[in-house]
Length: 511
Image (cartoon, rainbow, N blue to C red; front, side, top):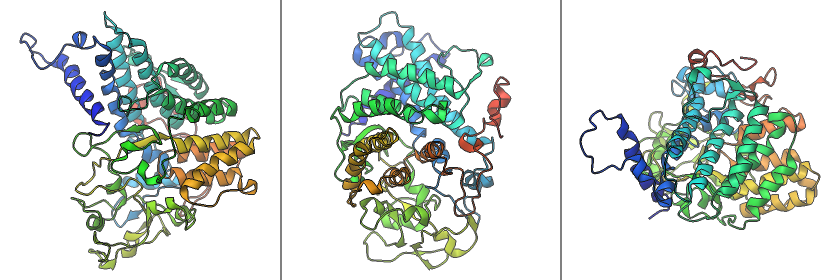
């Protein structure tokens, strides 16, 4: 049994119990459901009670939030192929940084606020317990750190946001706080609650926040402090990162792709993941988003992929030929499952040859259906049509090493930075860097190679632009993207539906 199944079972039990208050017939004795007050009586029951709050995470690494963070960067492009993938221009708008406060942007806002709401609902139930088990404070701390993750992402993406931490808050009283204020709240919330989380790294904490996942979140907050508040906090970031590394609870998995395989719950590198399962937990659709329709024959899928997300030659060419990570991309002739029979695009009769060169954002040409390198970092799962079983990674040790390298460089400790980045490069099978190779620009490229499509690229580009003044995020990009007029695109617009429903909210500058 995979470790993730413990979370699945807990979710099932608690969800059934939590929906019962909506029933109107309350005079019949229900034998299959325990009242909330009767359930949360033991430490084990209380630990299981956090499961529904985690469900909202399923929309984060493979949904609106990830798409908004990656397609606005240089790592993912969604070309319009004939009539496919235009969808009102939303995919092109992300790439071009022409953000609109529309339904698509509202999806990311809603997904994150849904997570906040689920945590607040669960905390409201727990706060009302008359008899609190011995681990009550630890579970409350875990929920607060989970909520901090959602608030952190919301602040990172939208800047000036409401911070709602009480389930009974009157919606008409909700107002925005600026980024600096949200930063201060998050720092206090994390430094108070992370030390109360479990230090166990085993099946009981798989898919849940441990102290080490909490310190990774705190490190992310400090790494981007200059963006959020105007004041860098590199030394604080180093302290948080070293807490994770020096715990010795994690290793760099010898095979990079073991972190993303169908059975990646055995990875010793992954610090915090969102569990998925083709039977019990759907929504992991990486294979469908990126692969071509006829790639179904390559991987034994039960449905035809969507021929959408891909990367450009500029991204693919960042990898040396010897870099093991390069094989996450499919380029060139594609074959059937036997590895011998060449495939064709049956609609055009062209050989199924993926060309990483994406020369425009939109084209009706037959060959353009094959433009872009396709990403199979999360390996496709035979017998599925989406809903893969690969657990999706939020935090892993390699990111800790690369953050340590960056923060150390920013504090003048290039020796520590060089050791940290070379640990990651050694695993990839590429030549170790010398002091002459170590620059912020080269480190930004290394983060791209290592963390490709993992949801951090937009944030990285903005952080490096703020630190160096180079237009990593706002600059021109091929194909078709011109330089942004200013830096208001560092954050997204507040979605129009939210402004309409709550007149206390105000639109971000520039929109």
